[in-house]
Picture 1 (cartoon, helix red, strand yellow):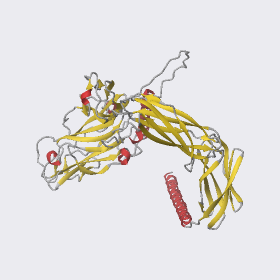
Picture 2: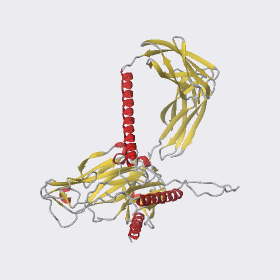
Picture 3: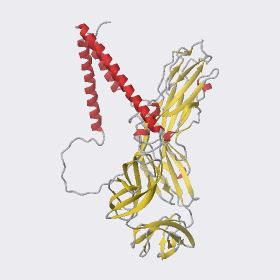
Picture 4: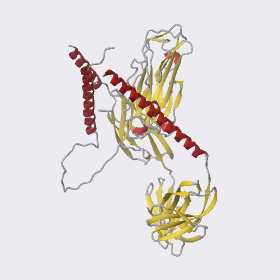
Length: 372
Length: 233
């Protein structure tokens, strides 16, 4: 009888666990539309599916331009939202509206009850009624004597066609000295469309370095300027940063290096000398074009506090370069003492725990012996 | 004290084993039901070519893993000035709160969609301490905390390990208002409740302070919170 009652209790518990209701939730799924570009006369329809909720729901629209938006009847928790923009142009700007799906369970009698609601915020971008252009400018970094590719992206952000767009690119060196000019062709750009100018610039004879370029974009009597920069690279490894302050004893040395070349560099490592004595050779790494990397290794420094002159030899591919470095040796006493103290505490605690365990084992063994 | 028999120990061990095996079977079945754990099939061979296209829908979703906080009915012991009921820590001064239910879980809200959301609350019905409770110096307060800190069980996904909502919470109680306010993110496009399982939940706790002279209306007084989850459309 007792066994049957026990099994019954277990069964009830299992059934109870299986019948625990899922947590209240609500979700609405649909393709992302925002930001929506306003185009006079255009119609956009998006389908939405509501899931997870067990309550009746209501779908609401609030915000700007909702007079042009229609929500279909909700059937099987699915509906369509249709934006029908009128054939007229409206004031330029950013308009917002919200699609809300609300649960409507009412007051469920609990002291503190909850309802859930999910909302989607939309932005409608209304561009200028004038001729508007948004240009952007980019350039490729190259190796010495290679040709730079310039790209000017043009995006019409107005509802009027632009009849003529052209650009003038001027290239400067690091000292702002003008190196050359490029004139692009002239093209028309329809309203809300995109276009590109692609031109090249020969770098023969120019040394490695960072250069910049300015593009003046002319469109139907207006002008906008955009800037960019590019590198002319040489096969060399640049030292960007290094560990300059060290302590007596073992130290981790780090050298941040950069590949100043438009191709990968292999066999990259460094040798460190202090007082003309080699104290470290780092492991070898490879660097992708224009990328930075870290060369590091641990070495012992047996020097008194002070400033020392050293040098680093950077190796890459089958080449190497050397540069002088300064190191400051600083003695820090307190952390070492602190570490020793903390270590001794750890040993003491471990010892104490072992002794206590030993005592417990002895007591237990004695008890077992007595019992026998 | 009577010693536990070997039979009882064996029975307990067998029972534990049964639960372990059942749990393993249920877990494996659930895992197999998930995407990414397909059933084992034979290798298919085909030379046909086609175009595959996919559209990922934005799913704006919110789950409230604790839907109600029901303190039940009771009264304040006449020897006390008030009874304080906090869904975070339970009844304060058990001797003062007579008959009320000890609640220790707040509303556990979780982003169960695939897009980040902001969350605000609104309150309907009795949204002030005076209308919900009445009497001298009643309290009806709200606070919200990251579930990575509150560690309340019941998330649909795994328990958060990182603070949600960019760690911006209101961990001290403030008065509930009918208009409510933003709990996570804001109305200006800061959708800071992440959909990532590690930081997708937070807990909203309620504190009720019932004074000894709170009027007895003979029926339950209630307030309904609406939690709005908003994403970009």
